[in-house]
Image 1 (tube, rainbow, N blue to C red):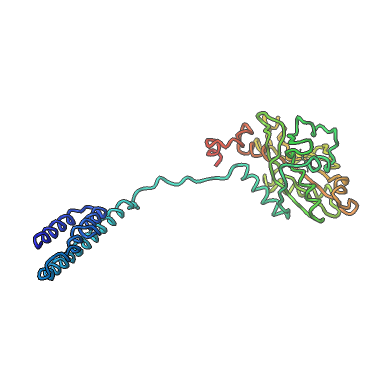
Image 2 (cartoon, helix red, strand yellow):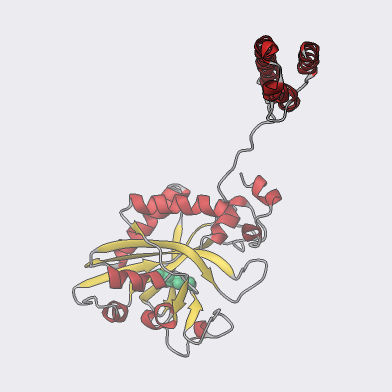
Length: 339
Ligand code: DAH
């Protein structure tokens, strides 16, 4: 029996020593000390040993058990340390390795232009608002005095969703929302996408405008011109020249179109401005009193002016972009050049 125990000790210590990982070590523990382990079985069989030997064998078995446990726990910490070191090695970050560099993002040229214009408007006291891109016929046309048979209502120009619902064809819809929402005096500006059934190198079915509206007592065309001049100067510099042409819009009376120095040739005359030195800045005018009345504003007390520039053309000119579609394709090769 003693010999058997000595052998168990020798065998177990060798196997513990040979273990290369925690799993293997645990298997060794179970093999000798587990419920049906070799040593456990011997201890369980003690009752069959003659009484005079039992004490001696019992003491021997217990000291053996202690030796095995000590050896197991030493090996356990050894293996665990090794595992920790190996993990640390695996997760090590080489902080001296040169980086591949971070790529810098940039704003889209339309966003840049829009931000510039909105900042300017805010400096001049305007409130920036946003109104829906999907509109009813009422906000897009009727409330802006666009008669039923006006060509702008033609199915060919407007993108209808149902008989009475369409993608807004202009941001002038914001005028109606503003007049319904704010009490005069107010100054609002509304940037946004507009939609038309139009598609060639200078027209896209989606393009961008903003709408400005000022309503107050005694607002005149002179106030309008002073403000427009100030805007042109802040945008293009104080040498900017302007000219005014009569125009027609159902929602303004009188209506005008304002041209400013061509930003491509700076007034010298080029293909874009057809040699005139001017390009269209925007359309606008004095708000038709009918429109104020329709939205519940007293047109005897209040008057207003409104204007609505498209911004894509300006962005194209200032960035020398030949086709409007480039603005909407989000092609990285194009966007990188626009940084
Ligand atoms: N909504 C017009 C368009 O899309 C532009 C415009 C003209 C806006 C005159 C105005 C305005 O506010 O008074 O062509």
